[in-house]
Image (cartoon, rainbow, N blue to C red):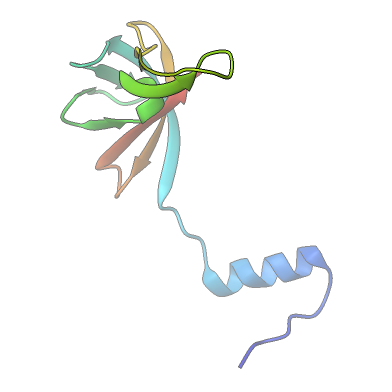
Length: 108
């Protein structure tokens, strides 16, 4: 049976949050790249340890990868897009699985 929630948008949202409770599955933190890919090392702000390539997952658009592109609406060619990450870059990192998993989302 579907429950009908009374009131405006804020009241409905408040009711849903109260019913489901607070859920903290992911934290977003900032970090500094200490070494670029493929042997990436990052230092998350306010964390005492450095993370290396075995500790983090890096989104595809930040890694070397192949893309098919069309040149001037004609020929389709395959090209390699090189990783833009360099030592000193700042990145956004999602921490998940009770801060046991780290996903580098993007440069900032």
